Image: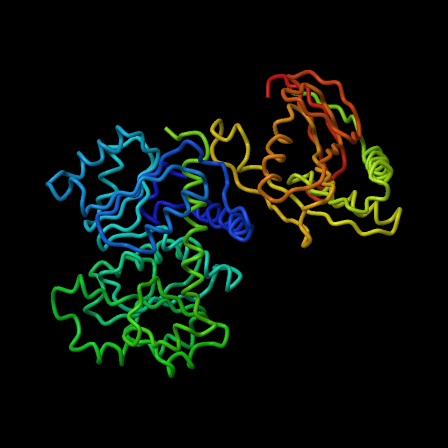
Length: 306
Length: 181
């Protein structure tokens, strides 16, 4: 394993499987009455969040605390960042406080990569701009593996706003490493130009792909990042790319539905599909804590990698 | 070259486990409240074998589980992060039971200390005992075994390696004198 976790593409198949297997054992800890392990006692994890987040920040905090690490939460609002402090100076401040790991979420793609050159501790990317969100991809892979039994040769369909989605990119990279066949489905305006070089198929026709999918992952339409007209209306988007009851019925009986959250119910996913027993949406949140414990343990638990 | 010598062969291991099973039955007066917890990987295998023998001898089925101690080790920082083993408690848990920890080799005692810490997070047994296939000495902590398959005098420079059918496809305990590797 590398010292940092910046991109899902940096993980070899062995690394990825080690994280998933470690999470599998740690999942048992969440079932016992004392959910705490002493492993990271005396280590400090800083959550550095420049963008809003509920589940990811709480999930990292819970993961670090369950491993007995000290957690410092930093959000840009109400910090010196609003006084104009740069990322580098913020990083050096954290460094001086002795952070062993920095979990960073930033609106700019590449911020974690830059940060990794300034701090001595491990950097974990918790989402950077429209680039990557590797722990989300890991928890998705973990959820799929638990439901589907394995990922090798499984057909995974990722639907929606791929252009603005860091989750999609990380998932494509990780799932390809793990041997799954990934198909992206989106309107042409919501696919990045570079998608031709990604290790996956691309389709514009959701109805044709659904019957051949073992898992369907719906992405959130990221209104906050939409600075142009990517589709004519929400209603039209929902008709062509939303997962409603009729489309859900076209999926194989064992196929599962996923969503990284937060959901726009009624937009990309119908409420009754989101709440069906074949939806893993709530499981994904619980698995998020487990997978982040595994990542923190593997990055910080052993000797410090030079 | 390192030179290795078998100190226990398959039949010796079987006899030692049979004796330990009898001792556990004797000391715990029929193993009524006993839970066997093996320390992965080979301790877990040995715990299952002891459980099977006790069932053969007295017809009582005693709960067998495993307890992974990786997250409780005191030497985690000395090596890259290790993969985790399985912790599997019997459905009735360990509260109020006599837990017998089972490991393959007892050496510094640090593994057992970690296991005691792990147990503390899992429940409150009435008492804890320790069974080991090989006791090779050189304790660094005040810990001793209640049931020992074989006391094996060793030098610190030597290594003891246990092979079991289930995990290694053979049965033997080897004493390896380390020369150049």
